[in-house]
Image (cartoon, rainbow, N blue to C red):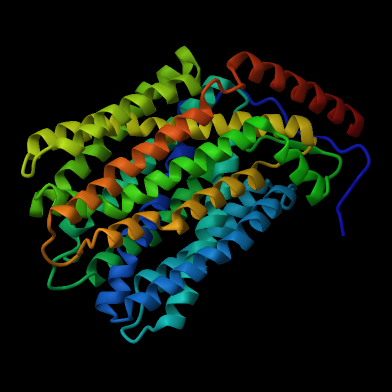
Length: 460
């Protein structure tokens, strides 16, 4: 049954400029979330397939089932997060619900019993994905709604992504301080349990700090549109569809890049135990580069800054294809520049998404940040699920364990460098001449704010 009302109207009321302390309180929540999520991509399959001796094909099947379940769950969570909990603050309510679910999922997944099998893994992973999805949808929507100002939104996303990159760095360095990880005689169990306890300790106070210090703008709503009408509005929203396409296409390249990242430096460039150095430098410069893109988004518009960063990063990254093995210094220098350019997508992309959400609110007459962010998340997960990088590596007979000939190394370079560049270029094309400029966003916000005032007057 459709949920329909007569004169539906929704908008966020005007938000004052936020203090730096408020922006930091909002941004710091990305830190424990990043620590929780990175091991799911980097270490989970090796942990359950190696330490717990579950067949790797079974582990892959379990993770694929869990991912496909997300396609059903994500839009439901997004819709519920938009529609329920208004009396207490929708984003606060769903953050409070998400934290214990995420913690239970992290505990079960990261610190399993020695006899954990496939069914245990499925339950644990589904639970941690559910909690993490609930947390990130509420969190992303809160960030999008925290300010109506075009420039301040970039500051919000910039600070948030800086904390996220630091969390990724902490998780990436876990083999150095946990006593476990690749090549360790102790396996991955010490690494996973260490990261699990870090998340379990940090997540509750981090969420509490955000709930306590970050205001949630009041949303004025007199009705809700139907699912069918809502999807029609989203599909007819040109900027939304372009951003969705940019996200999906770019993520295909990034997913391939992530599949081969460790192998490329270890085997492709023959850096051995030093393979992690360029990656650490990349993450450090990504954090350092965030303020640059906050500034650039103010000066030349977000989409223009994003295109410049993408093209510049692609040009620098392509040099890796021609570097001979063993060149640690040159490789690290290239990754340092690539890290600065790479932070732009996280900082500016999320800020542009908030502007697109405003346009959807104008046309749908409903505040639907959670639902739209769920669609963007589905696009990313769909790109990840394609697994094109693994198919190419298999076609070139690349061996994760053992020696590889020049043909296999060529396949590794294609997956880590050439394939991502192609999809990143396509992604940049979709964002070219993006229609939501600072001037248009200001006009959209003016209409939304007038509508909110009329609704407030009617309900007074």
